[in-house]
Length: 192
Image (cartoon, rainbow, N blue to C red):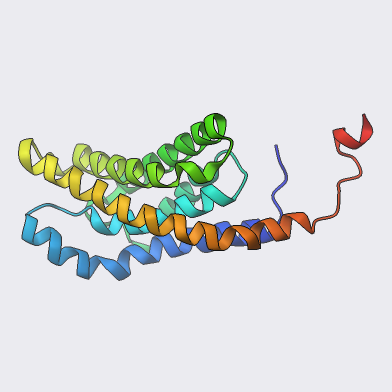
C-alpha cells in the first residue's frame, strides 16, 4: 500500500469535515426548494459530496472517497448528524463513497487522469445517495421518485462543475508539494 504523507492526510480530513459541515450550512436554503417540490432532499447532499469528489480527484489513493465516507459516517453518528436515517446513516454515506471511487478508478484507467471523472462522479454519487435514502427510509414511487433523483442529479452536476473548478485551482498546490518530496532511496525504480 502506498504511504500517505501527513499533508495529504490533513487535506483529506479537511475535505471530510467540510463535506460533513457543509450539508448543515446549505440545508436551510435547500429545504425551501425541496419543500416546494414536495421531495425529501437531494440538494444539500450534492454540495457535501463535492468535497469528497475534490479529494478523490487530487489524492492518489484508490479508496480515498470510501475512507473519507466511513470517517464521515462515524462522525455523523457521534455528533448526532444522522437526519432522518438514524442508525442507518452510515449506509447513506458509504454508498456515494464507493460510487466516487469507482468512477475515479475507471476515469484513471480509461483516460489516464482522475480529473475527467469529477463531473460524472458528482452526478452519480448524488443520485446514489438519494436512491439509498429512498430505499432505506422514504419509499417514494413513480413521478415523485423521478423528481427526487433528477433534483439530486442536477445538484450533483452543478456542484460537480464547481468541484472541477476548485480541483483545477488546488491541483498545482498538491502537485507542487509532490514534486518537492525527496526521492525514496529504497524504491524499486532506483534499485533496478
